[in-house]
Image (tube, rainbow, N blue to C red):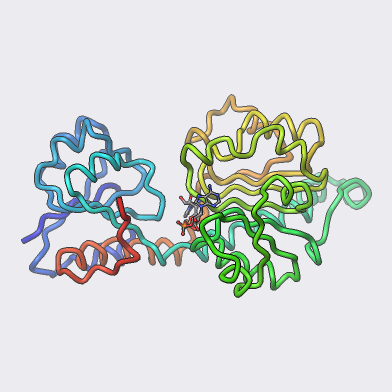
Length: 318
Ligand SMILES: NC(=O)c1ccc[n+]([C@@H]2O[C@H](COP(=O)([O-])OP(=O)(O)OC[C@H]3O[C@@H](n4cnc5c(N)ncnc54)[C@H](O)[C@@H]3O)[C@@H](O)[C@H]2O)c1
C-alpha cells in the first residue's frame, strides 16, 4: 500500500482515482505551514503539490518520499538539488494546461488592444460618446507577434495567432528552424532585433539565471510604442519596476501579467495603480476544464509512477 499526501486540495475527479484503489491510501493536507508539513510529510511515499514551497528544511524529514507530482508544469517551489541528491522523482502535468494558458494570452492581447476594460467602465459611467473618441484600439491582422519560448504553450499559442492572421516570430535558441517553420513561424536568433519590430510579445520560457530580468528598461525602450507585452510564464522575467516606468513614459502601449515577482502581488506595488497593465492572479490555468484535467493528471501520474508505467514526458529530468 502506497501512502499519498495531497498537499492542498485538487479537483475531485483527480482524488476519485485513488478512492477504492486498494494499492493506495491518501490524505488531504490543507495546512501548508512549515511546521505542519514537517510533521505530516514523513508519512508519505508520494505527494501531490500545488504552490506550497518545499525546501530542504522540510524535505530532509521525508525519508520515505519517492515522488512529487506537481499540479502544473512549473516547479520553482521545489528544491531540485535536494530531489536530485536523494533520487526523488518530480512529475508534472505536461499535457493538461497549455490550451488554457494560450487562451489566457489571447484574452489579454484582445482585451488590451481592443480597450475592453476602458470601454466597459466608460459605458457604465455614462461616457458613451467620449469612449469612442478617446480610447485607442488596434487590430491583430498582419501584426507581428514574438513568441519567446516555443515549448508546450508556445506551440499551442502559435495556432491561435495564425488564426488571427498575425505574422509570428519565435525566439527559442533550443528549438530548430525547421520545427518552428513547420508550425508556421519564423525563427529569430537575435532577440533585440525582433523586440524592436514586434507589436505583441508573449513570454513562455522558464525563469532561471539567464531569463531573470531578461526584459529590462533598455529592451522596453527599444520596442515600438504600440507594443503590448504579455507574461504568463513566471514573474521576474520582465523587470516590474522597469515595466511600470516604460508604461508611464508611453514607451510601450500595454502589458498583461498573470505572474509576479512576489505572489500574491503586494498592494503597494506600482503595478496595482498602473491602468495600462491588465492583471490576473496567476489564474491562466484555472478554467473549470483545466482544473479537472490537472487534478486527474496529477493523480494519474502518481499511480503510473508506482505501477512503473509513467510516461517520459511527465518526468522532469533533474
Ligand atoms: N500562468 C500559469 O498559470 C502557467 C501555467 C503553465 C505554465 N506556466 C509557465 O509558462 C512557461 C512555459 O511553460 P511550457 O509548459 O510551455 O514550458 P516548456 O518547458 O514546454 O517550454 C519552455 C520553452 O522555453 C524555452 N527556453 C528555455 N530557456 C530559454 C531562453 N533563455 N530563451 C528562449 N527560450 C527558452 C525551452 O527551449 C522550451 O522550448 C513556464 O515558465 C511555466 O512555468 C505558467
